Length: 169
Image (cartoon, rainbow, N blue to C red; front, side):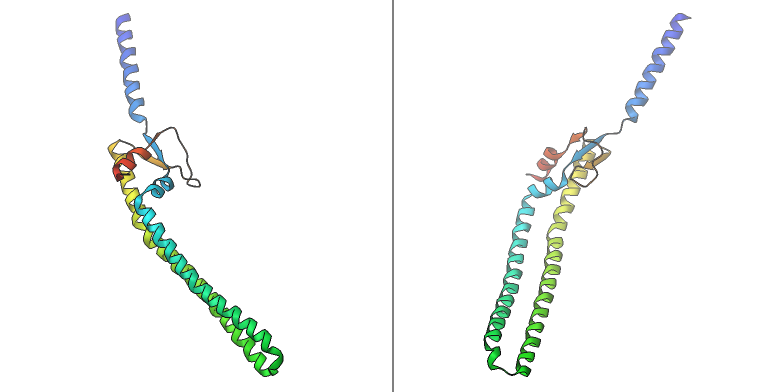
């Protein structure tokens, strides 16, 4: 009888240990911002984006220079002009200023759209690699430890080196 109780206790403990082990959820973490920043494709995309921003900035700067030159010229000539001519010049300068502001807003929208176009495929590639590595290693959840992404647990395995290997970085 004592042997039976002992055997039953051992079986119960083993069964409980198996259930407990199976109930464990495998969780990993990775800093996706760091991963994406280290990808060669991102360096190329950043270079293209920087060139676009420089080009847009040069165009706007040329308009601003033209505006300032006209403003200086009109201020210097104002004494020799009639009130009607000065009013027309003020309207012209106001119109130039409005167009510069519109150009700045359009340049901002263009830059934002181009950034999304350049980075979306890179982000998708990184996500696919993270999912592939996580599934291959049996992880059920992968938390992003990028600041502001709501890291809940950092005791899991960090997938950074495995994902970089997958991407050939």
